[in-house]
Every structure is written in C-alpha cells, then in structure tokens.
Image 1 (cartoon, rainbow, N blue to C red):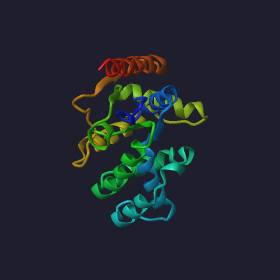
Image 2 (tube, helix red, strand yellow; image 1 turned 135 degrees about the horizontal axis):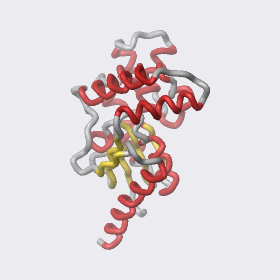
Image 3 (spheres, rainbow, N blue to C red; image 1 turned 90 degrees about the horizontal axis):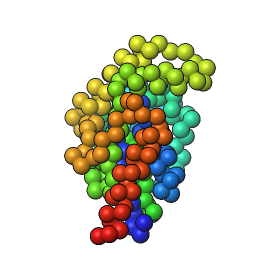
Image 4 (cartoon, helix red, strand yellow; image 1 turned 60 degrees about the vertical axis):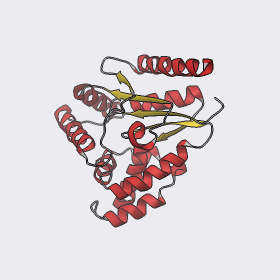
Length: 216
C-alpha cells in the first residue's frame, strides 16, 4: 500500500464491527480507531465533572480536549458511559469537533480502519473500502447478554433488547449524521456469522479491491 489506505466500518451497536475492525487493522497493519470511544470520552468527562449531559458548551470543551492516543477502552466501555455517549453524540457542534479529529487520524500513514456510525457517509466518504456491518436486534441483544455473563455479570435479555432498540432509534433518527449505509458500502449481515466468517468475508471484499487497484 503506497498511499494512505482507509477502511470505513459502520453499523449499529452489537453487530460485531469493533471486533472486525481490530482483526482487519492487525491483518493489514493499519492504524485503528473506534470512533465511538471519542464520544464516550466526551460523556465520561462530563460524568467525571458532574456536569449535565445537556450542557452543550461543556460537551464542546470536552470534545476539543479528547486525545485520540489516550482513549482507555476499559474505562470507556462501561454501559452507563455508552448510554451517556449516545446522548451527547446528537449535538452537531460536538460531532464537528470530533469528526475533524477522526479525519486527521485517518490521514496518518499508512492508513486506518475506523469504525463507528457515520464513517463511510460523513467522516471518510472517500474511504477505499466501506463496510456496513449489521445483525438483527435479537442477535445483538443475545451477544451483549453473553458478554455481560462472561465477566460474571447478570442482565435481563428483554431490557437489553429494549435498550438496543432505543439506541438504534437515536442513532438512525438523529438529524445530524444519522446511522445508515453509504451508497457504495458492502453489506455484511453477521446475524448468522461467527467473527471468523465475518473476517474472511470482509477480507475477500478488501483483497478484491486491492487486486483490481494493482491491475489498474
């Protein structure tokens, strides 16, 4: 890869795009950014300073201070932080600030895999590869439940499913940068796919694009 190569991965919560992004970044030796963590970092900053989530000015300040090199997944992956993040993510000014940071990251050689909700449509509309990873809400809820139970926690499937429904509605219904597949995105439905199958399917798409480019 002689130029900066970008893989954009979008999709709803729990579809498996984060795991897929990590596998692809490792395989193709590209930088990796889970853009959802940038919004979580803003929400976490507000929570830490006991500031209300509807304080747009504070959210903007927190967004400007987000350091993409210091996103602590362990801290930011907390469920409460994710819920808060989906609320601050609706602010257009916060999105603009973070999108600029994400675009700068994508331009860093040798390139990057970015996953989120609006990568192929807004952040990197000229990405070399665009994947839209999805799965049924029921499958995503079951995966989330299994994840919680795997670390010794307990949760109610019905509540998780309802939570996913609310998050999908917020993500897809917001006026600014709603979650939707880019027109030229490759659709990957992982409802009946293990991560290995999804990884191989994504690799086939990417390798095909690379092969065609080499022949051009």
